[in-house]
Structures are given as structure tokens and as C-alpha cells.
Amino acid sequence: MEQAVTVGLDGSAESMAAAHWAAGEALRHHRTLCLLHAWPMLSPKAVAAPSEADQNYWSKRLVDDARNELHERCPDLPLTEALVAEDATTALLRAAAESWMCSARVGWGLPKASSWATSACTWWAVRNGP
Image 1 (spheres, rainbow, N blue to C red):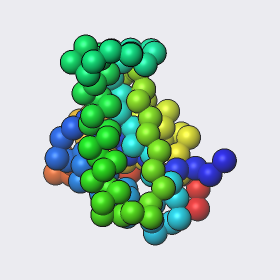
Image 2 (image 1 turned 45 degrees about the horizontal axis):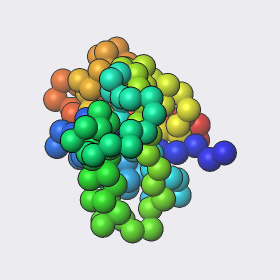
Image 3 (image 1 turned 90 degrees about the vertical axis):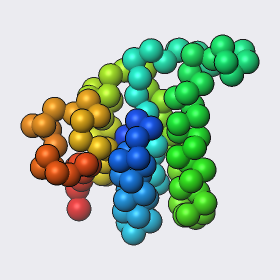
């Protein structure tokens, strides 16, 4: 299976900027872009309830909004989504190990030691392989 470019989303402008950067990398390297949002309180099963009662509503909306914005700018970019019921650090480090490249804004659950960014940088990237 092809390794994707993965970007962590938290709803901030910085994470959306990281998503646009990651989309460009995915296009340049002919990869799929995976939109990842991690939140420990995600409900394990889809809730058949009105949106105001769906525990996962805001997480789904955050990813949907990002997908729509990216699709508008990059209609040919293959996109996948991952809503993960775990803390951001665990989810991002797992994604980094499984992805060709992983991007997220610094501070989104990432310890400084795992990032290649300075305090002035708002995202980090890890690339696996050539």
C-alpha cells in the first residue's frame, strides 16, 4: 500500500496552513493526503443521531471543512480521512511511522524533542524513505 502524506488537524489556522503545505507535497510526490484528527473522546461507533447530539460532530466537521477547502484548491488530489480516538501525540507519532511524510503544527500534542521545528515555526515534518 502506498504511504500517504499525513497532516494533523486541530481546527487552528496554523494546522490548516500545514494542510495546504502537505497538499502541495502530496501533489509534487504523487501521494495521497490523509487528514488526521485525534481526540481521545471520539465515540467508537457512528452515532445515528441529530448533529447536536453526535459526540463526534465537531471532529467530523473540522475534517470535512478542511477536505472541502483542499479539494477546492487541489481537485485532483486524492484525500483520505482519519478520525482517531487517542491523544494527539500518540496519533501523530504512529502516523509518522506509517506515512511517507507527516505534518502538524508544533504544540498539537507534540513534545519539542520529536519536532524538527524551532519555536518560531508552526509546523513540523518527518519524511520516511526516499
